[in-house]
Every structure is written in structure tokens, then in C-alpha cells.
Length: 334
Ligand SMILES: [Mn+2]
Image (cartoon, rainbow, N blue to C red; front, top):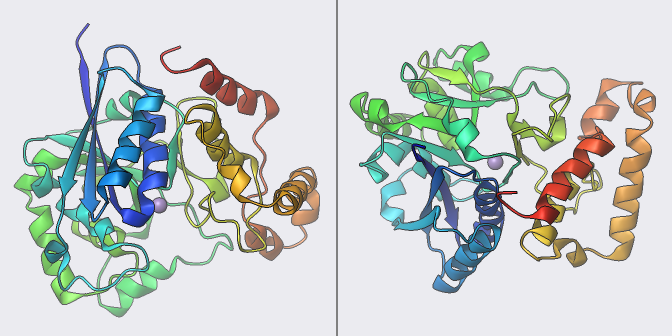
């Protein structure tokens, strides 16, 4: 059997190491025989202690030598003049992948607020030489209104086809062709002309790569606030956009089924009880409210505003949820 060499990239600063480790560990967990995974970490200030912890968590999910870890230390100067971002500037490294990984033809980039529910090998097989980037579907806004991103482009006289707009939080990047098309240099030129793009690198990449991108099948990058009809017990990946499981401060951040999956993975595979960080009362009411809502979809349909404010009220069918969790209990390569 030929070995499949998969390259998966994450970028993080010191604050985001743990979620990144959870996502990287979930990718390693699902690796199949005949697949090799290299995890590249674009590191912007990760402490050595945190890096060790990240490696240990990945190893806990998959201790075989099919997984290798590579640390790429970045320095802040490469993002000079790019403007502040509400997260970390390391997000911009996505635009520079072709230069940061000069020996690779292809790489997968994943945000840290994600969880794999299938092998990265499945996603790797979707490489398409005619495209620069294959990225996840950007769901419609909750109220069906126009994505404010398009107003941003319009105000600057930039023409972007709304139907081709993608979420770059999960992408399969054709680094060889991007290098030939000098995408990184074009992104830098864009940043010079339009500093502080609305959704950072996503705003830039959608414009610069326009016409040479394609959406991934909807199961790759399912928004946790919008998972609709995707069967998560099949190979897929969840993206916790604006719904990161480890933050439950706002009233509408409930313990939905898809959020609980993240905690189940931490507990069963990584031996970390992250739910214990929340008070029993917080766990009780946020879970209780979700269970009531998931059985009362009719009540949410009175007005789309209600549903959009409550975010994710869709449950995962019981058999699907159980099959995902049982797989974690059994262990990897099972
Ligand atoms: Mn994200």
C-alpha cells in the first residue's frame, strides 16, 4: 500500500494553544493505516511549556510514528503594517503558506476552533490541481441578510462574486500553484492598499484567488451554530465559529450537542475534563435550555429573529452522537 503523506497546518499564539492542540489531536486520532500526518505549527510566541503540552496531547490521541510534529517559529515583523485583528495576527500567516512551507505542494490549513470527526486523509483526497484553494462553505447569515463583507468590498470599489465567497477557516491549499501565481506577494500588496480588511485573510484570499477557488463538500467545516442536516457520524469536521465551546459567558451560548462533542473528545481521548471549569448551575441551565429548545423547534419558528438570536438549537440524532463518542472510547485506529 502506498503511504499517503498529509500535511496539516495550524497557526497560534500562546493564548490559543490548547484549542489548537484539541483540533490537532482529533486529526491524529482519526488517522488510518497507510496515512502519515505531519502537523505544522505556525508559532507566534508559544512558550516551550505550552508547546510540550501541545505535543503531549497529540501523542495521547495517536502515539504511533505516523504522526510528526513540526514547529515553525514566526516573528511579528512579517505582519508589520497589517493592522490589528481582534484575534491574533498569526491568522495572517495563512496568506503566506506558500512561502513558509516552500517544499510542499499541498497543505490543509485549519483554524484552532475546530474538531475533526474523520480522517484528514479523506479531505486530502479532494485536492484539485485546477484550483488554488478549496475551502469550506460560508453559511448564509442567520437573518438571511447580506453578508456585511460585500458592502466592505463595494465601498472600496472591489468586485467580488458573492456566490464564490468561502470561509477560509478550513482550506485545502495548492501551494505549488499559489507559488506560481505569487499569491503571498499579491496578498501583501492588497494589505498595503486596504489595511484592516474586515475578516482579515479571508477577505483578502477571497479577492486575490477569485475565480480559482471551489467550495469543499458541506461536511468539511460545518459551523456549530448551523449544522443543519450534515451527518456528523460520517467523516466531517466542525468549525466553532463565534461559538467556541470553552467560552459560555453570553446567555445564548448553550451546551448544545455539537458543543458537548468537543468536551467529550477532551475527556475521553485527552483525559481532560474541561466541563469541570463551569459551575454545576451553569452546566445545568445551559444544557436544560438547549434540550427544551431542540424539542420545541415549532416555538422557535414564530419569528426568524428568535432562532437567529439563539444560535444553534439543532440536536444531533442520538444514534449519531453515540457512535461518535463510542469511537473515542474505543481508541484510535479501531
Ligand atoms: Mn475559526
